[in-house]
Length: 298
Image (cartoon, rainbow, N blue to C red; front, side):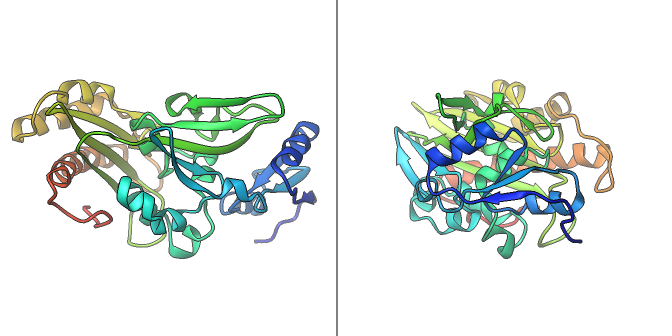
């Protein structure tokens, strides 16, 4: 399928130039990796007057530790997250998440930030940001905003970004305590596929007290933080009875639908299964054992 609508193309040389162009062009769209935008252009679901190519903005290509958090620039690809020594050492679950995104070819182009800007319900980047209390950083000519991830996702394909703003990156707080995490994604087959459902679990010990951070993906219009399940688990050590209690609460947290990829009932059941496996894997990883990050658990 080819791109049939006409639009102007510009590749600014600086962030200031980019923001100036964004202010003047209300029907402009930003091109970073392009894996979502190009598909939308071909399918004619978007029709911008201008495409702004930001791939030349090197300052948005960084992965760095700053202020107790990992900062991911807007141009950082999933492949670069996989290869990052900082990410592998300090937050290996990001490697696990990145490896589950589509195929190698897509990961070489697709960006972490582009994923959260598309805001599709099945995105892989959303659950970790929401569960870990991450932030999305946006900039306009007049100000910079730091938006909590839970407030970034408004609805399917709708975010808190305002006209004239550019997403420059995201930050995820680094846990200070002993911790383990797990991301499980349910797809129809190995390789390039969208999630039917996904779950992210982070378990840490604060003064030897277990604390859980949990979010689901692809089972609601936006990534869903499982506050009710977290409240039931926090302060308690995992055992069979507690895992069963957590599974029984899943239906009160997620709102899956039936579509061409899966039924509501199947998604709901698999969320329970994935939650159990993710909780147990996170606990084992916290203890220095368990499956290696990136191993398929479903």
